[in-house]
Length: 331
Length: 266
Image 1 (tube, rainbow over the protein chains, first blue to last red):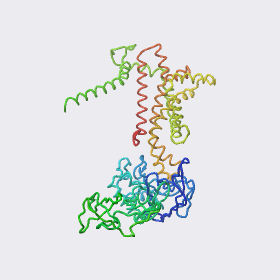
Image 2: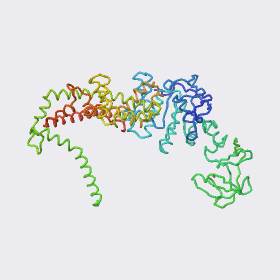
Image 3: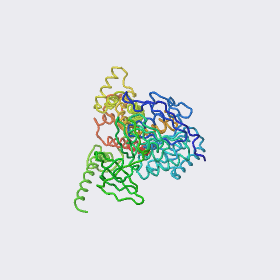
Image 4: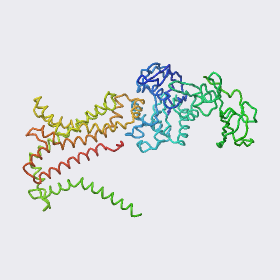
């Protein structure tokens, strides 16, 4: 049976704000547009407002000001249970008193889908997350990874136009997380569902997303593809939060940002000169800390491939990079 | 194995054995007295007979009291589960200002000596001139039974992952359906666990009942107390045995029917 979404919906947030108890704004005039079928991540440190934003899209939180649109429908004042969304939670939030099959069937039962069709769709959804044969187990009898698959099946079985994920892989160990990242991305592509993904893990966001909104202190700092966010950070916060970066201060509070792997080491007399302070062998790459004459430190990553001079601590080196690889940050 | 852990293990067993003996000794003694045919309570027993059970079950006074106690306890069980469960939900979920103070207030019947509660209710009923109806007795019992349900239900609600309710809501359940599909089934073990205490508190209730029963409508503990003032024979022990068995069967039945520990970590 076809498990694909009825039809993926776009999501639009128009200057959405939310504050609690008159304190600072948890979410401050956030505007964004998610395209139908897009894998869209909200990325930022804890307390940046990403989860609150997701919870407002789901309808768990009301907005103070602004509008939320799903497809052509303004859902700002629509209660949670009428927004027709699927959602996966970090804590799985399975119904502990129900079997796996009953958990997955829940949304269909609420939608008064005929019993025979429910059975068929639950079976198909469980097959999709590779849990065939687990129908009669209770959530408490499953591992964390299996529980998260049940939660995923419960969310997609209703063929939602929008799938919301609140740090869904955060409770899994590293290896399982990487595997689930891959599977979730595959599933999203297969189903073609619009997916909004909240995470504080920048690697996860870079690996999975079509586009990322980097959030900080309730505001969106930058929206872009993973490549744009990584190669062309607009603000200090984004540059610093995503990966490793060298910031070279400029007059007027501005700064130039260069990624460690974009710097080429050569003979002294280049853009900047310095002395190798330490070298860490990372396998595929070696990370050097280079002390400049004015006391600042630069990170340089060199790929371990082909013939390269052997460098050791104390060597004098020159640092250079292509003009296009230096990014001017906003003050 | 060395001798030291063995010594420790023996001490551990000894302490636990002593505690269990201490807890079970009264029941053992009552069993002996209930089965001993002598017309007064004596030791050592001279034989085994069911004459005291026969006396207990053939006495209209005892039977009437037992039946009344059971009826009252069942009504108290239901009332305290409804009131205590709803109170717990309101206190844990209602965003009520001063909910901590209110919780302490609802728990306060546990802090007061029951005999004071009984006296206070007695005077209140006298002031209101309503006599001593059975529902007045039930109210008195419910007053001290509700805190048990309140406490066990609050404990469950305290550890309740509200994301589970949110998951139900986001997948299409209206607030009423969230309550009946998720909230109620998940707090039910807490409510019933408190309900068992409520039943026992009412069935065994003496100080409050003492003030609130009518002479012709006494509950079993009051009848036993009055009986003991004049007779101290094996019928008392037999009645105690029946009371204990009654309480145990209620716990077992509730456990079997509801499965208290089936899915909730208490």
